[in-house]
Amino acid sequence: GDSVTQMEGPVTLSEEAFLTINCTYTATGYPSLFWYVQYPGEGLQLLLKATKADDKGSNKGFEATYRKETTSFHLEKGSVQVSDSAVYFCALTNNNDMRFGAGTRLTVKP
Amino acid sequence: GAVVSQHPSRVICKSGTSVKIECRSLDFQATTMFWYRQFPKQSLMLMATSNEGSKATYEQGVEKDKFLINHASLTLSTLTVTSAHPEDSSFYICSATLSGDYGYTFGSGTRLTVV
Image 1 (spheres, helix red, strand yellow):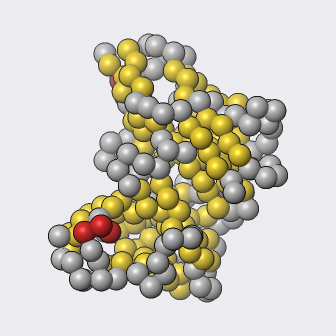
Image 2 (cartoon, rainbow over the protein chains, first blue to last red):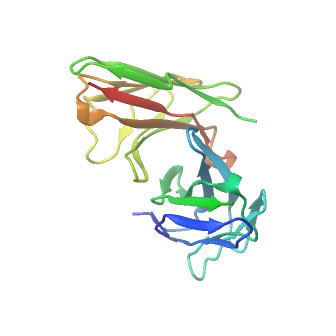
């Protein structure tokens, strides 16, 4: 079945460092891909998404490009802030069911 | 934007009792709602998919008699944990969609603690 494999954390970075969180997927057809963020004490929030190959999703300085040839959707940010500390989930949806990666906890230190 | 309200946010119950969790789409009609369970340090696990007016589809390994899901209207789905036990303690999250193309909106989650 469909699945998402996400880079294991935790990831600890200093403020203004470059962030990459790897995500690869296995799916039939052409799934839509998402990154969700969960801040402490809050529910999941959609961060960005891409619905077809070569699409780039972006939001709040985060970017991810849908790469069908490598079945990847890596999350990047050029300069992280302390407020970016959260758990990030890569996800896909195919035929309506959503599958999530394991989540990556990011801690950004001042 | 689309809002999904999940209630309660936290609940503590005694072993053997039942707990009902509500998931409401406030400004759109959700044809499909999903219920997830999040174990500590683990990803969300899809428990079941419910479509309005029909029986929920449960994932393998999820006890349908223990986790009762009702999706009686286009704006409300409920998850009832029956005869709860401490191992049912977890974080439960719902999500709703009008259709997959419109994206998914998550509730804020319910932290269930069974004592």
